[in-house]
Image 1 (cartoon, rainbow, N blue to C red):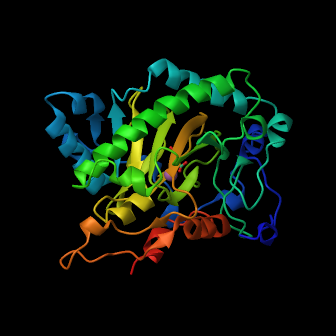
Image 2: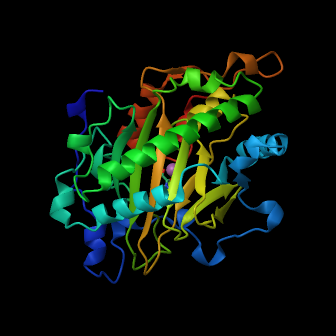
Length: 356
Ligand code: OGA
Ligand code: NI
């Protein structure tokens, strides 16, 4: 992409700074059309057979293996989302990671502002994706940087220098998450009937990118009119989400939106677009969005496992035959990313645009 092609066409407003002014009403640029509003009074929590699956990852290691594999397959096929418990990322590491992210956002605006991101890159301190003039904006700020591979993460320039513990803490989290991702990609390969290294090899494991987006959703005077992140599916392979236990994430199930009920110490996992394409539509990359609160800050840390821009992605040959023709054309991840930086998040439009 030619970098100069993209410019901010209007000033970038930090939502945290806006919220701290104590507004009585949300400004018009954050107000969603009625059809996109979060319906907070009708958030659906379903019963045992109908809520986002919770999977005990330690079940892969013992006599529960077959049953656990089954649960993983079903979650990926029917929900595209699950909450993972007993997942081998140590709880103290998760706690320290969320706390370090919070400390960064608690710094004065000027200290965060030095990391302000550019319109052609999501890396740094940001408050919008896409440059479209007059776009409806999300009620949230973010901070994005690489965690992995080591030669792409620029700890000196791109990671917060405060709090002092940030680098050490995030490094610890990265290694634990890399290990979890490795094991999960193997399980997903097996569950598709592929060699256990299959998905990893396509996406360049162990050097597949892990990119962290810390989301900060300030309190909002009119949470019923706006969203912290508008409806979207994630563009990469798979996403891991830590949060501060404040509810807000809503997941699409058919034509309804379900509120994910936070389970302390669980990691939320969702299938992203490239895995939907590779699995030829068997695994679902499901739309989700974020509702915000009137009185409470909500924070989440999404780690996106993303291929390199020149990785060619297509339905796995072993999954395609006369009865199951390829549903998507081959494309590079770069093509995909370019549309995203230009046009912002748009439901599932990107993955659908690669349909044959
Ligand atoms: C994201 C996302 C959900 C959340 O950052 O892509 O979907 O709960 N975040 O913050
Ligand atoms: Ni997302």
